[in-house]
Image 1 (cartoon, one colour):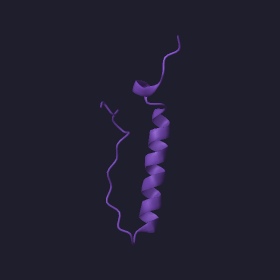
Image 2 (image 1 turned 30 degrees about the vertical axis):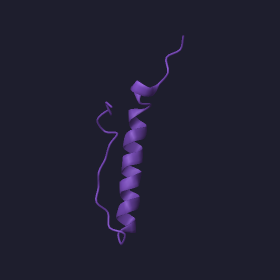
Image 3 (image 1 turned 180 degrees about the vertical axis):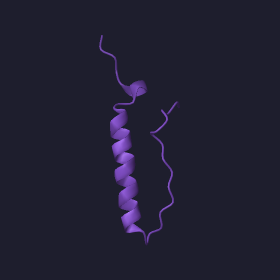
Length: 46
């Protein structure tokens, strides 16, 4: 499928680690936002 590096993350978080879950989600979200739109799935004009 050709996923760009940095768009796929794996992390083990126990259901008892709510704080860790929040930290992981915030980190992944900020990293993916910094990458911008996935260039493979952006429609080209014209």
